[in-house]
Image (tube, rainbow, N blue to C red; front, side):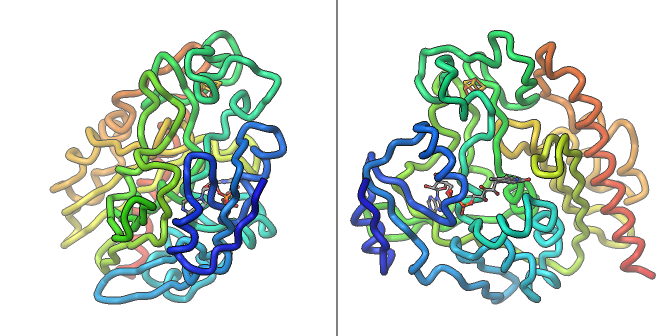
Length: 327
Ligand SMILES: Cc1cc2nc3c(=O)[nH]c(=O)nc-3n(C[C@H](O)[C@H](O)[C@H](O)COP(=O)(O)OP(=O)(O)OC[C@H]3O[C@@H](n4cnc5c(N)ncnc54)[C@H](O)[C@@H]3O)c2cc1C
Ligand code: SF4
């Protein structure tokens, strides 16, 4: 295996191809390499690239993809303009992992489905399309509730994406096929498995994510909640971002994670919030609408009530934050 420490974006792109992988902090990738799940011929180390800045300009926060998670949560501009991100990152993994993991790597890491990561399991459509799915075929692992298909029920891995999608973040990408950059909404980066679950992304693995841009507005309040089966792995999570004027919600984003095949926008819930007094967002009607579209299997049915709990809790925290701001 060849290891290349790229000194520029152009050099990184010049080594990218079907058998290469970029290395952010290397945490997630190294586990898959050790188990033989990923077998690239070239590893492109991004650590020398100038992608480690956090800049604020004209209502936007631009975060380089090589920023470490610990740097992100400790940055004064993030703490004052995007505290939702600080809140999420502080609950991720461990301090040592947060010192090494990068924003780009966290957003693009592969599913944490245990049977995808188990090389002794031969039935995984994500590893080999057409081989079956050991989870669907009887494992006790519950899988995801939203956005799954008959070929894969794996949950997406990124927790940071839940908050960034609630903030309507965009990502900037470079492709080896052209030197120009392109941007797309972060939510559009992720795909449902459909009949080909081999990738979780709508982009090619050769595309280089260079930054994430987040609009920041002063009249927004957020709520984030997660319920974890262990302190290290999120099981169900929800991020809510509300824009409030005169006690009325004028815009809302509700994003579910943990139990979802991709960051999941609760689209049927948002219209029930927008235009309503802030106090009414905690109704059962709103919480139940957030779960519209869930596709539980027998093993995942008990997770429905967990999803309801995290949605309710995230909404409650947003309402409380707004009340605290006014005091
Ligand atoms: C014990 C443990 C507990 C954890 N707990 C949590 C948790 O509670 N919540 C949570 O969300 N995560 C958790 N994680 C996952 C952890 O957050 C990820 O391993 C880490 O964020 C990956 O970041 P990285 O920079 O090391 O990624 P890497 O391993 O470097 O990369 C991950 C993937 O992204 C690709 N990539 C990296 N950077 C780029 C780029 N700039 N452009 C294009 N592709 C790129 C790589 O090719 C690879 O496919 C845990 C991990 C461990 C080991
Ligand atoms: S749920 Fe998806 S990733 Fe997990 S074993 Fe089945 S096909 Fe593989």
